[in-house]
Image (cartoon, rainbow, N blue to C red; front, side):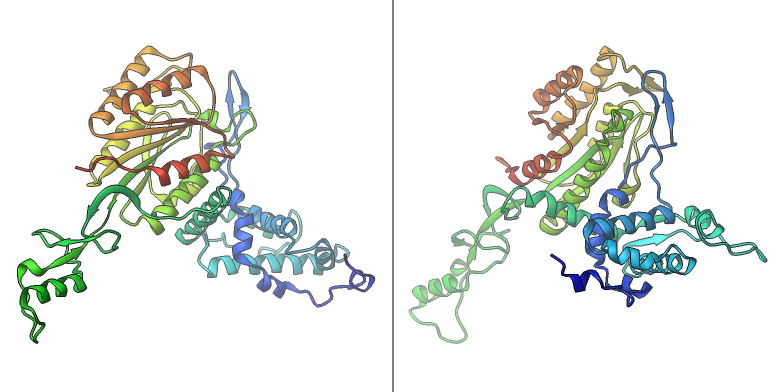
Length: 431
């Protein structure tokens, strides 16, 4: 509890330079929801059943500064007393100090490589510079857009992974374990005689023992025979190619719940896990909606939902093509969805849509893609964010065909389910 002397402190030493003392990594962690906000592609949209829905994600510099201010207060890095001292009595000088402090924090985020900004619009020559609420400077700040850099995306992935795993308790990472032994770098098994094709991971002690037993002595130079060579065995570490399919249809932001932003966080966490712990694995992102497309990881933070249906078949088709282009022991699709298939790409390129019930034609064509995945040795694990009867029936069929797993989850436990599934998976046979 603060004593009276502390309460009477006027904080006169605080200035815009105090922004230099802000912990940027802690700040970014508190800004994660804002930085990854999904919004709604195209802004507000009127639907005959749901009415007016959706808002654009605000990536303006003005919104970023307000989010920084809110995060500093909520995290305790800036106390209300400090804020009052900076604002003073609301005079122009105090407002200017506050604005300069926020500018210095944004500049640090840029200098550290977490954010970049689009070029700010230039003021016309002779234009008066008006500060304060509603002024030209504030209007210009609304026109400047910020973007997460690759470093910023990677850091948010790291924080998301830490947050998810902390709720699981202790977790030791490794590679995907199998029951097979092979000659590799990590020595986990007994030594064995060298055979043509083995990695020359020589067990020096056992090799010299064989030479000694054969020769009776170890004269220099050592007389080594082919049969003396022993190599250490290591557990076979399998490689896995994963495609994460994210549903970005309209329903992912309906009913007052944003389901898409948590899904993006899971994708970032899974990417960071694979990059740091399973360097031989790959992860690609496919968004599916009226159609489907692969997006680079760098574009994930800015991905949005929209007034779309759910073209699961097109997403599976693209995912299968991406997986078959990679030579990995395991290939899998992780699908996050909250709706049944309701759209299909026709042979002539047109999109057939039907959101009423489970359309027999859409279902038939979608299950054809599922069957093709099974024939190609691709497992599909589905994470459902809704209990819609048609969705549940569809997912049961998918799991039955590909022998994959299906989970009903929510936005709070989604990351735990997906990471636990990924970490626990072990191959039984490797060809």
